Image (tube, rainbow, N blue to C red; front, side, top):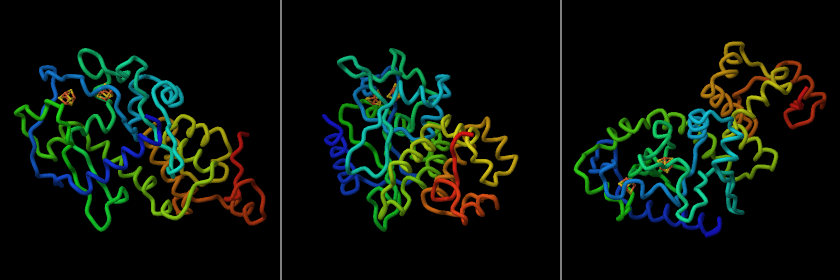
Length: 284
Ligand code: SF4
Ligand code: SF4
């Protein structure tokens, strides 16, 4: 199946979910358990489309002791079709005939504590405004997977207890910050230039490169960033990611989330500098 066909399948599934799946709220319950004694254990960790969020990548690259560049090149794909407004990152499956996930072993997921959001959420799904929902609140739903024997197990969860049990709350908190960018109303009427697309990709998914952009260019010469933030983003990837989202709101949508220094404002007025904001971010 090529990228266009895969994306068309995903769009059709979203439509089916919005039209026909039962909406669940936090107090609704369901029966499910996935464990080593389930006969289909590990069966689903192959040949599957797992879209990675920026926070998934942050957690997985840290777990594996890799830079974001190394992680992206070794473990991900970035399929792109003409209908897409933004790049997405997908977990690369293995090259063996069954296309097993690179992280699955006989004992289960080898990066379990840092497994990505979709692997934690399953068997739940989540639909949010901006993904086809109009005038309707976000909702959870149960996946419809007849081959998954986990539904026959006797353990009962509410949606809320599942989110907590699977460590999803911190993923969802970072996910909300990301959605403020990826589902921004700006994209309803605008497309990004290739340069801005590259900036979006770097700030969201390639954090180590984004850190170099901040510290190895003259970014800090032109933007007013307090010392406490500078110290935090040098070392702390989560703080850096939040800073990257602030930067994207400023640089893509023109929001007032960053403050330019007087010198940069003056240069901008005088037309000095190379980009739209009057700032030259080339390495010094
Ligand atoms: S198919 Fe269901 S029960 Fe089986 S391993 Fe996957 S999630 Fe667990
Ligand atoms: S990351 Fe882990 S849980 Fe997710 S598909 Fe791979 S092995 Fe399975």
